[in-house]
Length: 293
Image 1 (spheres, rainbow, N blue to C red):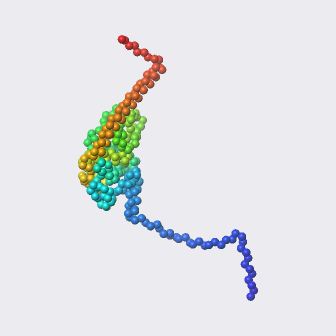
Image 2 (spheres, rainbow, N blue to C red):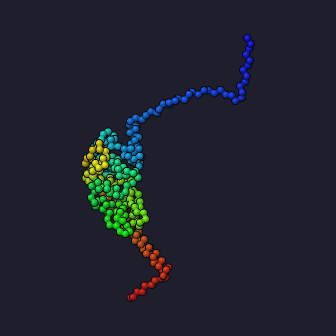
Image 3 (cartoon, rainbow, N blue to C red):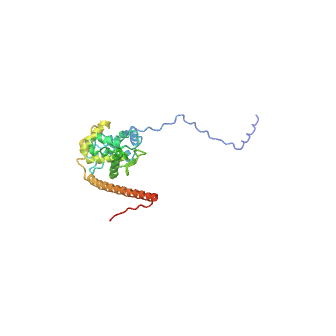
């Protein structure tokens, strides 16, 4: 038997590759979140109010009513249930449950998700809450306009002044483009924070009216029906001292702002009058007035 010939050398560049294992056709799926995690994710996205996402950071932190404390007097407990708990702290500051309730109302008042509500929308909500005509600032000032300004312009001016005095968060828009604009006027558009602050002041300042009014609004809009009507004890008994002090500060601030606007308009009128006089002098030359003594 003959000896086999030697194996010829491999060509340069030849490499021996380690075969790779075949890819799995169906890789394992990631673990599904638990029901609690799904509910928490939906809540953080604002699904329980109808918003695609929370419009404000504090809104995403407000617990849903089912997670609110069921202990009378508040206190941040986490016992589960569907009971109403206090809407205000003793100093008149709103609790997270009140903020969540106002966010639910705001979602109904702002169905287009613009992030702001018009004065007439706010006025209708106050009417639903049983506000007297003189307490509904925009509606009570909706009266006779003029050839320069409409009645809505006058009402917008008063509501805007109120928002500025109380520091209710809002933005200002032009209601009638192309028409004369009322000095220091404009249409105030409340956002969620401004709406919540305004309703907190109104509800803590007049608890009895707020109790009846918010119950009427709950029934009208069908908000949280499983919670039942609001009991009287979740509201304050009387206006807190801190809110009364804030009211006095607002009165002072309002008077000062009104005086500053009046002075500014007076100065502007004088400047315009002087400008007209100067223009007439350029056209007709200096004018003299004879005085008899």
